[in-house]
Length: 242
Image 1 (cartoon, helix red, strand yellow):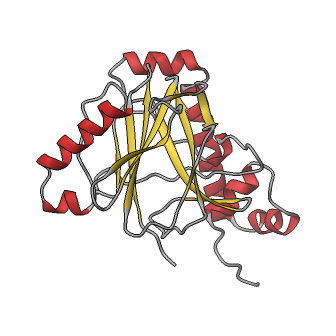
Image 2 (image 1 turned 90 degrees about the vertical axis):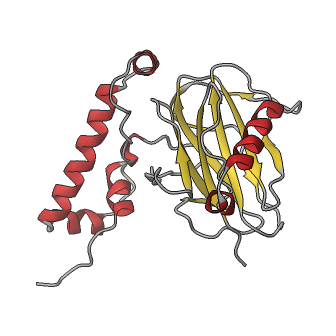
């Protein structure tokens, strides 16, 4: 019997949403472990959709003090603009990826041409685009960048340094992304989902105050810590490579 390499998570996710080929289907059919992993992913999709079948269920979760919303597998992910996004759980206990609690969620991917890959702390480069998918009942999004010299800039806004309007929903593609320039050094990107429009000026004040109070390690990671905002906030540290 010929041993096949272990199927990746992405290969199983693609099979779930009908993007696999006949060879992959035969490989899964001949591999009980792959079948078990596939069933587990499918079950997690089903559990997620049963728990959050509509925006009203997200609102109920927001009001309650119940369990944190689980991350859905790729089978529940929105396919839009010919891009396929895989949900990646970023570690909230490190300075590299920070999220606040609540039923909202944001995923970050890096797009080159027509191909987008989930961000997993890999180096990025000028000319690539940061794209975001979100699950939320909130109606506004602001994206802010923090540079190596601690300068704070609005990256995605309405032209007047305020949040843009977004459509609430499950696994929606944000209407705007961020085209990366060739500025050197690490940067931290913040995505802020809020029930009302957020002013960049207020966000900048919170970030700068947090940095003033941060210790040396947190400042090295451009991490201001929790922000006192009525919003769901997630951030990632990105570093540019050649």
